[in-house]
Image (cartoon, rainbow, N blue to C red; front, side, top):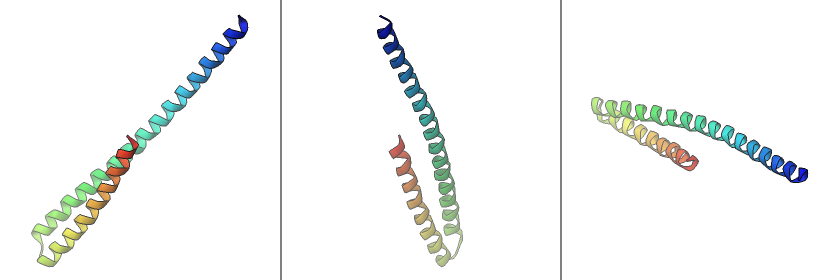
Length: 87
C-alpha cells in the first residue's frame, strides 16, 4: 500500500511541476505578445502620420509618404502574422 501511495504522490508532484512550468511559459508568451502588439500599434501610428504627409505635401512628397506607408504596412502584416502564430 505504501508503494502505491508513493507512486501516486510522485505522479502528483510531477504533474504540479509541469503545471507550474506551463504557467511560467504562458506568462512569458503573454508578455512577448504584448510587446509585439505595442510594435503593431506604433507602426500603425506611423502609417497614419505618413498618410497625413501624403495629403499635405507635394506630389513627390506624397509618393514618398505612400511608399513609406506601404513598407510600414508590410511590417505590420509580419508582426500580426507572428502574433497569430503564437495564439
